[in-house]
Structures are given as structure tokens and as C-alpha cells.
Amino acid sequence: MRLNKGGRSEVDQNNEILEELRRITKLLSLIATKNQEQKEQIKVLSGIGFQPKEIAGMLDVTPNAIRVTLSRIRKENKGPKVKETKERKSSGETKVRQ
Image (cartoon, rainbow, N blue to C red):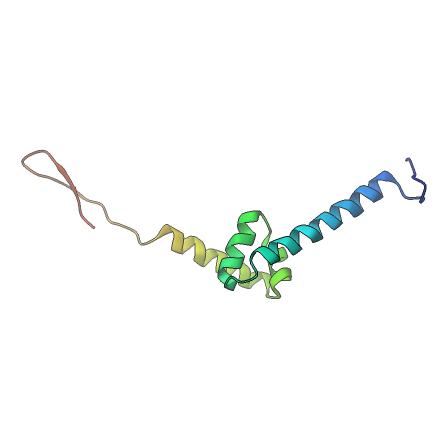
């Protein structure tokens, strides 16, 4: 294992750099979603790739609250189910009923 002048290994230095980058990323993410409603913040932060536990820590809520919100967002994005049935007209057209 190679040590630098400060007596720390390169691995330790790299881990410290990665941790600092994580903190900066979280801070920038919070700044970017500052004036949005919590639901929108959760959607954006999740879209960036943060896990529910990480988002919960940033927004000071429970991870379960984040998972529930994400589940509701997914359901909303699916929209109402449309029942499609085909009816044949004498002209051969297909009609979709909602």
C-alpha cells in the first residue's frame, strides 16, 4: 500500500474525495429543487438516481414516505386504464371505445 506525504493511502484519499463529491451532489440537487413542492422534489431527486433513503435524509422525512410518494407518482404517470374494444363497421374501420 502506498502512502502519501500525509500518511494516508491513495484508497483513503479516493474515498474522502468520493464522499465529498456525494455531499456536493446532494447540496446541488437540493438547491436545484429548492422552490418546488416536496412531491416534485422527490420526483426530480429520484430521477437523478438518489435512493429513497438518501432522499429522505435530504428532505427530513422517512424513507417509507418517499417510497409511498414514488409509488403514487408511478400510478399517476400510468394514467387511467382505457378499455379498448374493437368494433367492426361495415366499412371495415376499427373503432376504439373508452
